Image (tube, rainbow, N blue to C red; front, side):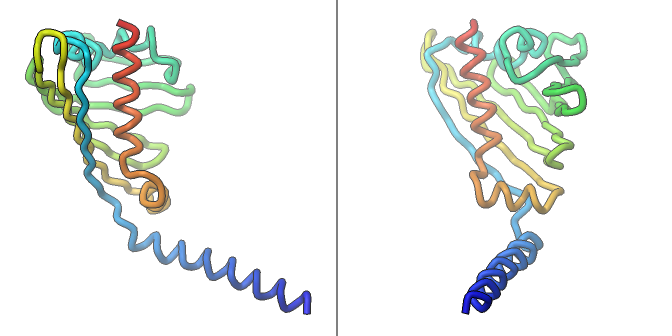
Length: 169
């Protein structure tokens, strides 16, 4: 009797594993999410936090080093979380001080995400930000991870970084 129960439990686990593998081939590998928030900071302050990549090394705790070009608005940069774990970024477009867009290439998770920020001044002390993320995953397992978890995980990380940067101004 106990042997039959063990066999049934094993069959259930094997069935679940096979289902996840099959499901991964049909999982959506692209998604778009958006969020907006009003911050109690002037537009110029938020713009500085977004675009001053070289200054972020001073307050960001998640990166150990950063490589940037020397332009006023950084066009290409990389953030290193460890010596062998980095994310590459490329500026897509900007319109100072209202629009900023870049692409993030995460080789570890095989993701390419595009983030676009729109900064709308409410008054001289408040700015509304609309952030949109378009992500494509080339790793089926990462697609399953984001499908079962939150699609807006990367977006929330970016918003948290912005809030951290504003607190350090």
